[in-house]
Length: 386
Image (cartoon, rainbow, N blue to C red; front, side):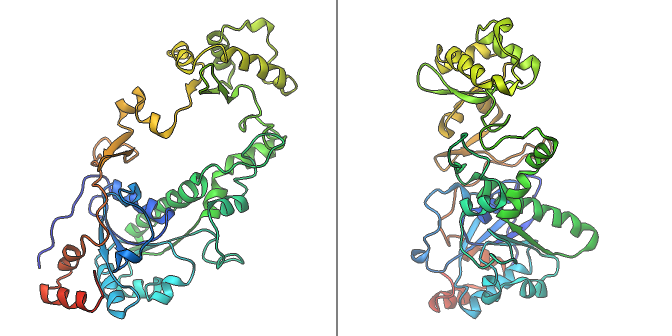
C-alpha cells in the first residue's frame, strides 16, 4: 500500500519518531520534535480506559498521531518493531529494564533497524544505585543540587514547579541528545542509545553556579547572593495594587536607569554592589516601587534600560504585546499554549495539530505498514489493537 505523505512543515520535516507513551518528560521531548516537523507516532495502550496518563487537550499530546497497541502481547510488540523498521527515533520513559522486558529494548530495536536513535528518559539514569527507585522532579533536582539554592534566606528550599527536572533537565535535555545523535548518524550511519536522566540534566543547568562559587561571586547561603534574590537589584517587588515586578538591574548603567525610573536620588544611595548595604538598599527600592501600580511602573520603565518588567502569570503572558507580536503563544484546539520554538527563517514550523484521541490513528498508521482491513479486524478481535 502506498504510504500517505505525512511530511510536515519545520526543520525536522521527514523525521519519523516512535513514542512509547509515558509521563511528562518524554512526551515533552516528543512534543518538541513534533513541533519542529517530525512525524511522531505515539504508541498508547490498546484499551484507553486503562490509561490514566494525560488529560483532554493536553498540549504534550499535540502534533502527533496515536495508535492503541497491546504491548503485553507478542503480536503488539511485533507491530511496534515493524514501525521501528521505518523510523529514525524511538523514545521511551520507563524505569530501567521495563522496555527490555517488553521486548522493545535497544537490542531488539537495533536488530530491526540499527540506524534508530533510541532515546531513554529516566529520573536517575539507566545505572547507579538509585536507578531502579521511584522519584519525581523534586527528588531529582534535590540530588542534582538544583533545588537547594532556590528560596529565601533562612527559609526552606522552594520547588520551582517541575520546570527544572521534568522539562528543562528532562524533556529538553533528551531532545537535545536525540538531535545530537541524529547529527552523528550522518557520518557513522549508526544509531545509538541516548541515556538522558533528570539528575544529569538538572545538574547541567547549574553549571554557571559552580563557576560563580569557585570564583567567590557566590559566597553566601541560599537567598544571600546576587542571582537568588539576595541582591536588591535582582529580585521581585510588590506594587501598590498587590501585583509584582521583576528587577534585574545589575550593571552600573542599568542600575542608573532604574534609579531614574524610581525617582530616587543617586547621590543619596549606597553603592548597589556593596553586599553590606543590601538590606538598607532593599528597603529603599521596595518603598519606591510600592508607590506605583504594576502597570504604572512598567509604563515608566518602557523605553529605558532599567530592566524592570511585569511578573505575569502564564495566562497573562499570552496577552502581552511583545509575546503577541512574536507569536510566542498560539491557540491549539481552543487552548492557548506556548507556540513551537525556536524560530526559523527558512523552515518555520506550522501551528501544531490539536491532540488526537488516544488510538485514533491506529487504522491509518497500520495501513501504512501494509496491513489490510482483514488483518486489522483480526487484530482488533484479539485485543492487540483498539
